[in-house]
Image (cartoon, rainbow over all chains, first blue to last red; front, top):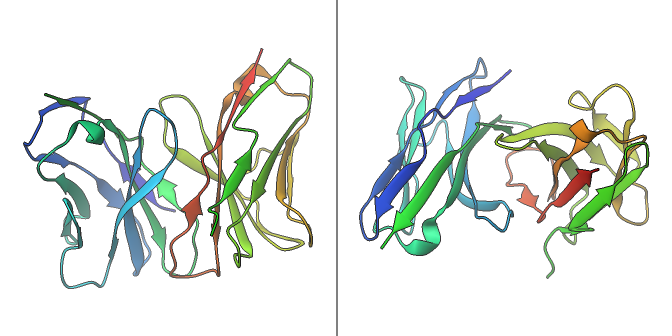
Length: 114
Length: 114
């Protein structure tokens, strides 16, 4: 079974600043994928970024980057140059290779202030 | 190319009634996953279906909940005799195959039991 831990309290971030969202995980699977999703107040789940456990480099997608530290079992999301539209809940998730059943953390609330 | 379509977006049921939630996967996707999001929580896996088959229902409550994905038509998540604790957002995701591919989420159905 997989376990995802997101324990940061809600965060206020100044517009244009960077923010790091913490995620640690626990799994016995040797191969797995890590995901971050954004859930704005409208409720939909928006895929942001993916990191495979065997990827040598940290994933980046535009203003999103994933700080993957395999030995520490952490997969922190970094959002650079925050925008007001980044205000949302952010969920870390993982699945073992070979299936698409995702295990989610409880989320981090981010509010970007002008 | 429409994404994953869920309907209704919002559903209100009285205690004891039945709730039917529909999910039409993306075109070409034959794998469907249902997740439940309780307030202030991350998504929890419920069931994984392929056309006409339930592959994994390890996350489904033992009673009152059922799911199907018929040969023709959308996948249905059915909750009989709803109780207040069933109030949640229910998300459907689809993928073209099982394995190392991204699952795309619908916008969710918010069920409120009054």
